[in-house]
Image (cartoon, rainbow, N blue to C red; front, side):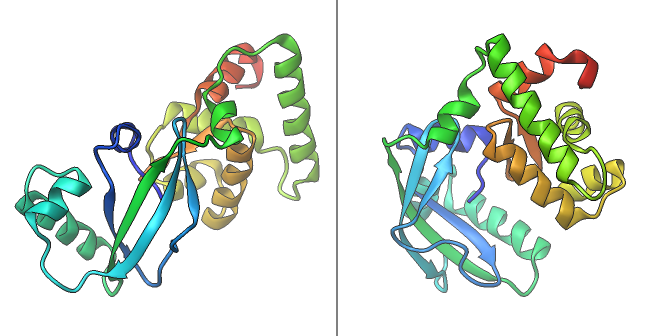
Amino acid sequence: MLFSNEERRRIAAGEITLAFRHWKRPQAKAGARHRLAPFGMIEIIDVAEQTAPVTGEDAREAGFASREVLAADIEKYAKRYPGNVLYRVRFSFVEDVDPRSVSAATDALTADDVATIASKLDRMDARSTSGAWTRETLRLIAEHPARRAGDLADMAGRERLEFKRDVRKLKELGLTLSLEVGYELSPRGRAFVAATPTTA
């Protein structure tokens, strides 16, 4: 599940415990854990179709100022994803930290750290059938945070799904973070790009 930077902060603080999502089918299930970079993780408590009107209590738990504001937000995304089903997802913040989140939040890189990351990126480029892509993708995300994946793919001259798949590989290295829309470099990613300006 994707959340904005502010939502992630508020979830970690225990201020948000509920989210509404428009999906064709459930994309989360009870008991599953999801990364909440760079804070830790969330554990899904319950996923159910939302058939009744939302309430003021729903709004408070989802981090909205009022029922009306929440309803307007739901309507906005209903128009964006016509035909999808509205689900309510209840979750809790988990103190256990995903090691990948720790890695992403670490911006104190040694020369060996930089060399190790560079070596991994070189191998990823070498295995690609479409040529070197890692540094260009990092550069695009650095220059266009929160930009739609489709827009970034067009800038890179690549197919959208292939581009998103490759960004996930960078995320596994702790170099990028997924936003509600698009991506941004993690602290680790920014530190790596700053340490390798000739390849950014």
